[in-house]
Length: 192
Picture 1: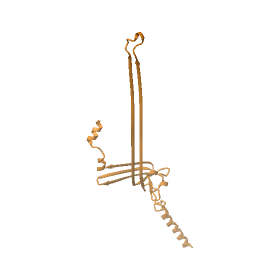
Picture 2: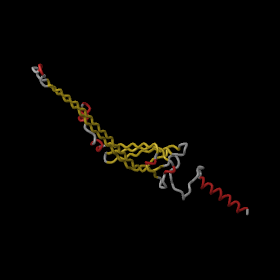
Picture 3: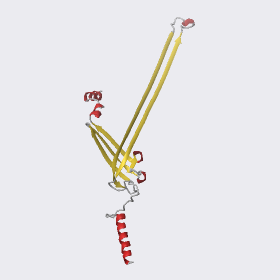
Picture 4: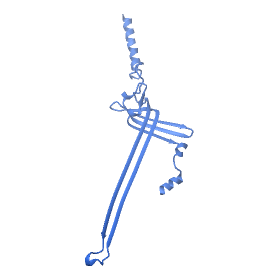
């Protein structure tokens, strides 16, 4: 009886070590999803951002003035006076038209780390991804606030589910320089 009690106490002690771990943190079950939940954990972001804007303006103005005075020769004893005639016509028109269209799309996948757990339990995330290929450097930085409930079972979250998101994407290299006008063209455009 005493040996059974010893074995039970030792088993409870060993199970508590496995459950709480050596550091005293609660271990997750092997059957639970592996999701980011503490500072330093990595979370995968699926970025799919689209922006479209259209600005349209149309103005039309028209003004027309017409004046006509016609006087024939005098009547009666004043018939020796020559006839008097005047005619005036004024027309002003303005027609304006403007349209600005802008659209952009950015799709990528990147990993970020939990930087801080906020008082409400949400996570402050931050990450940078740098890809250098054939002289082209692409830098993507992302920050935002994530709700733990929005993290899927495969430890991913859509960028549309991130609050206060800031995505910065910039490229440097030959392709980026090809889109930029030359120094002479920029000086002429600046002057005129």
